[in-house]
Image (cartoon, rainbow, N blue to C red; front, top):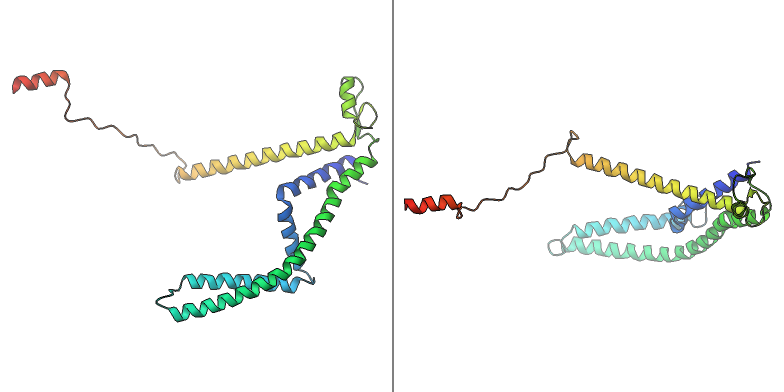
Amino acid sequence: MPSLLLIVFVLQLVIHLINSFGANALNNWIWTLYNKGPTPTAKAYKEQVRLRREVVKLRTQMNATSSQDEFAKWAKLRRAHDKTLAEYEKISSSLNASKASFDSTFTFGRYACTNGLRLVLQFWYAKQPMYWIPQGWLPSYVEWILSFPRAPRGSVSIQIWGIACASIIQMLHTALTAGIALVIGKNGKNGKNGKNGKAQPQKVPVPAASSTELPKGEEGESKKQS
């Protein structure tokens, strides 16, 4: 049986991934996978996808056709577009009800398998220590906090361990995101500097000297010559 420490860590990791990916995006992805199998809505879903592509195709052809120079062709495309769009909206309205029911069921199951399971584990193993801290390492009040709410004094409770796992996962996610952004920004900057990777010298604009003004010495000499 896997260690309870590992189970709590993996559970917190799954919860973090779901929150980062987005519940709605996850529901849409699972809905797509669901309709790829032999399900009651699979046929209607495939027809919806086909009609959506057909609507986009006809709309593109309409935009590329002049309604004045090629009116007959444009009118034919418009009739086909309106007919296909009506069929698409009809099948979409029937699928929306099925998708709403699917989202509710999947959301409940996802919550039960993540946050619900976490609450059950925290309640069931509230008095069980995750691991023991060597005696005398920490002050008494710190030991009480780490054992909160019902774990033995001198140990780490499942609640505190879950909070620690969530914090570590969040810090690793932030560091990884910052590192990726830094690498992408550096590569983009090198690409702008040229193919050889060297920075191109910047041209500094030089202010043009006024031809009407002369230094005082030269101005006096010009007056004497005149």
